[in-house]
Image (cartoon, rainbow, N blue to C red; front, side):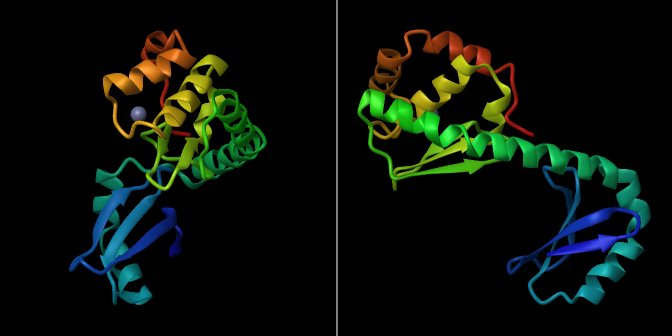
Length: 181
Ligand SMILES: [Zn+2]
C-alpha cells in the first residue's frame, strides 16, 4: 500500500503479519518504507508517521519526491529497453548453446544481475542494459549454465568457460558495476 505524505512523498506501507510494532526503513528507490502489523489501520499509520517526523527526518537519508520521480522515469525507460532486448538475447544464447529454459523474468533487484531457479526460470536485471555487451552476455551465459549446475562448482565454471573463454575477466569487471537502477 502507498500512502501520500505531504513531507515524505510516497510512503510504502507493508503489512507484516509477524510484526507487532511499526518499523521504518528506506526502500531501494529511496522512499520511506514502513512495516506495520497486519491489522494496523490507515489512521494509525498516519498518526504514527506524524508523531515520528522529527526522528525520520534526522535518521533516514530519504530522496525528495522529485528525485524519486526522476528515478522512476529512468527505471521505466530502462525496463522498456530491457523488455525489447534481454528476452531475445537470452533466447539467442540458449539456442546457440542448446539450453532449454522455461521462462525469462525481468527484475530490478539491487543486488544481483541474474538468477536461475529450479523451475528453470531465468531472471535478468534490467540494469544489464547499462553495462558493456560482453559483460551482459557473460551474465546470460552464467545463468544458462546454472540450468545444468545449480551451484558454482568446477563443472559449472568449466561449462561457463566453454561458452565464454574470458569469463574470469568478465566476472571481475562486472564487480565495478552495480545492478541497482
Ligand atoms: Zn551463479
